Image (cartoon, rainbow, N blue to C red; front, side):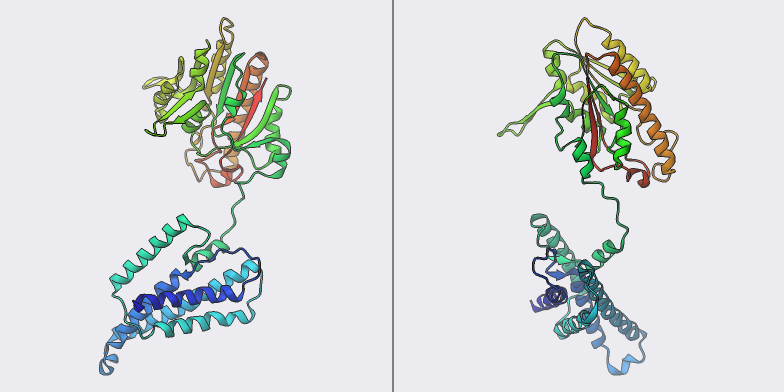
Length: 419
């Protein structure tokens, strides 16, 4: 038992002593109980030391294996001290403290740890691998259940994370957005703003994400000046168009407590029941994402695609707008229309290399296409002031160069309600 317990205690010694000696009242630093890398290195040090001890004094000078193992043992000890030094620097960097006398801690704790395990009986190499695997799995499972106190510490990973370039913060909405626009986690925008007393057009704009630059968003919304009812942003759980198409059209979702069967009511069914003509339009292929299946299940009375199987052609967004205009011209009945745009879909045909195309060129093409879509949508909304328009993004731009993706918030999409 002590073959396993001593290395574990020794690794905890190297991990915890610097933490305790640099501890400040009120600090909130999550710290593992033992160093996983120390634990592995100590097991290997004992293993190699035992191999060296088996060589007789007479054979040591004749066998190059002995020299090789001696070098490996020294390398393991140096690595142990180096990782302890990195771990100390990680902790001091958080506080902004100089190294000072704390620089002696890695040498002292590593020396004590090696002394603790030096005399214990080693495990076989296969057993060491198995122990390390089980320890890692146990740490991950415990971390899933109680992340506030991890079991293991990984100094090298912490160091790499510390020195890596910091990505742009794209998850938390800036205060200037919150001060000017509606910011919500709700996915019930469509349900909240549809109007059962008049026509409704629900538009899902492909790859329309919320820009980090609020002035860029203001330029987009200015195209709808004079006809906006509400402007804001909401959070998407998934970056998938097919998920957005379904969740934006949900009215209610219930689950049976016994059978766990989920029953979903969609808005097209609700509007059809009160006499609306319901229509879904998409200028692309009906086979994409198996759209023809789930759109049929949502319950639209009429479905229009640019392509069905091998027939037809891709319809541009301007062509779809013309069709919506003709549908709204029919005043003999009320209409509920849902349309997913396609012109701003990634990857764009003119940029086949998804991640290594020029980010500025992609930004220019994307902005131009998005602008064109908004202009024709705004013109349509002005021609039909009696119709409620609800415009939302499906997800932030993906399948594009990282430099371009970093201009948008993750999982946040805008919405605009017109008329």
